[in-house]
Image (cartoon, rainbow, N blue to C red; front, side):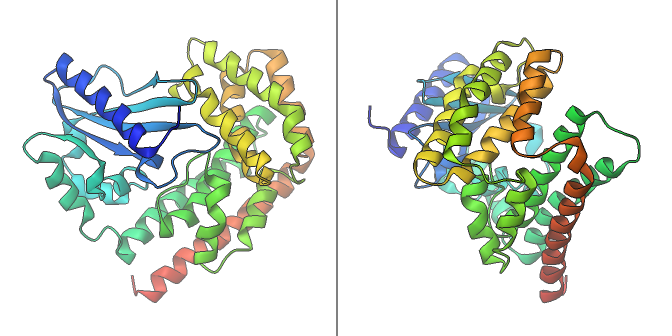
Length: 335
């Protein structure tokens, strides 16, 4: 089957039509994420991000539905009240961009969503709004950094969990200054262009050093891929598995990472591998074998207790650059 963007939108519309036959509770449905771009596929896999807005409280906040091994629906469910103060969604680095795209609408009752879009779109790309989006991500990263700096010794598993969360937030503090927040799969594919637009291309190297102290090679990826897949499989069977790690999303991460390696951008495969494995390791923290496998992988990256202080200093330096970019934007426009 040849997968195109039009086919993905067709799958989304079929889902919406089915939901509308089952319920009269739906106010609106719109697309978000990569399906709104020209290149939604990586390695022949993708997900279709949807938001369903309900008139009543939805029974779940997020669900994942399998379409094929390579494609899944990733559905967020919102109560209509989420949009009461819709202008605040200008600050949302994920949903805000979708709400500025009229092609995102799949279903709308009495032009309700068009009204919301008009409010969100106004001043969405103003310097003030861009600054606010970046500042929120930087503050989150800095708060996590402070937790890492706490003199109370954290178990290494918890430390790495907080550390990589901080790294992701710090990277997005820069990325959202000229685009939507970067997702797990696309972080290292798209960060260089975002950094270059700010005149800070050198930060790409610093970001890679935060994730791994040694370069990842195809051999590194291929030797650890089965162990990573085993962790994702185990997480998918866990009763408390979050939607992001459900079996329907396994190919979404694994196939795309493998494609990056095959295309000569092995470094870009590092973040989806680390980020999903981190989440799986936390979920499986009582499984000694899984915990040991995760820590052995981190040793391969030379991320170990002995270098915690040095990595915290590197993170601080990276965050300083993000905060400086925000300060420059503030000064340039007199915010």
